[in-house]
Amino acid sequence: MSVWTIVVAAGRGDRFGGDKQVADLSGRPVLARSVSTAAEVSDGVVVVAAPDRRAAVADLLVGIEGVVEVVAGGSTRASSVRAGLAAVPDEATVVLVHDGARPLASVDLFRRVASGVGEGVDAVVPGVAVSDSLRAVTGGALDREEVIAVQTPQAFSAWALRDAHRLGGEASDDASLVEAAGGTVAVVEGEATNAKITVPLDLVVAELSLGSVRPDHGGGMVVGG
Image (cartoon, rainbow, N blue to C red):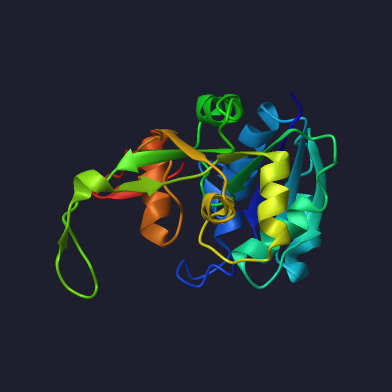
């Protein structure tokens, strides 16, 4: 089994207020943490960056073994994944897609989703239970026992992912595209700490998860150090 990973890092970071991929997380950039973990379980990693950030991202990842190429992303998530997929060799049998802004996904999670592909399953995604009460925007309560929050990395049979993207559709994640193309999707248990860095507070929570937030002498909190 040849496993390749596409790490998507082409977003503008508007809600974060800047480039969250280069934000410091306990002494390492967010993206470097995501890519390093992906590289541990992959034969090669393709990183998708904003076109004007390719060189900066490549510099950021110097020293991480397994990064094969940094490619320019598109205007949507799906187009960015397609750009990354074009750089994945034909001999790859399993392709993982991971958000660069999820720096705390564990090596174990990468391995579990990758190993679940096959035997009639085209895609494997991690999911976690939803603890909040839910309502539809059009009105009415939703049963939270019937939904999960989906994370990355998501793993795919390479041919199923390529076939789904040949249709040129758009979706919030690749499992939805594969399912829309007739593929089968299985769910494994995700990780509560595998949160996406979207706003600055998420970075503070990630620091806490790493145990790197220490109290200052004034009774507040100092991140890092």
